Length: 227
Image 1: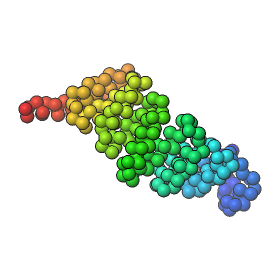
Image 2 (image 1 turned 30 degrees about the vertical axis):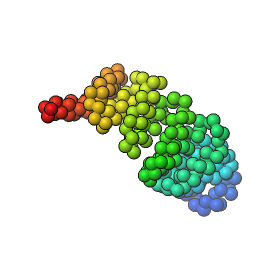
Image 3 (image 1 turned 180 degrees about the horizontal axis):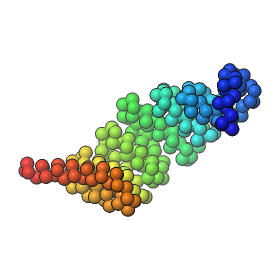
Image 4 (image 1 turned 180 degrees about the vertical axis):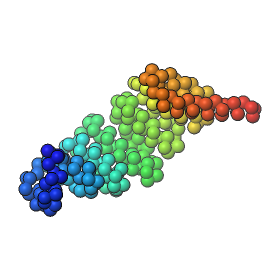
């Protein structure tokens, strides 16, 4: 279906006439949004996705995609917040779909330096995610970005309880330790990261973490010499 739209668009560029001709339903509007994105017409894509939601407001996937376009492509923070709250209002109190909408509210708060609001959404996500390591990882990133390294450490440690062999988590924890001047703990975590990466033969990544580990050893050596 998607392949047809560029041809139709060349024949009849009038959008209203096109919509009338096709008697657009939700799926067609979504396909049109995808075509607009390929053409880098982001505002038109947003409009098409919004129209699709008017025909079926509970399409979570499209809501999240629309939030991503609003924030990452258009940098429209006010509209992102408005749409995220609108989406939250459509979900039940226990639905995990809420986490996606809270994430964008947390992101806007981070970008605008509103720490109290960002903390509120990060805490909500951590409390509602039922130990999902992916969400705990995202909250750890948030807390790190606002300089709250101790809380960031706690979040990533919680994530590791349910995904202990993920090298991404070990590396991030090592980074937190290093930034918090816990050099010995950081060294142990970098070594764990390298060991886990060796199982997947991720050579480029191993070299990157090895450089971090070497730099950390140099810091430790310098500290010992200064004592």
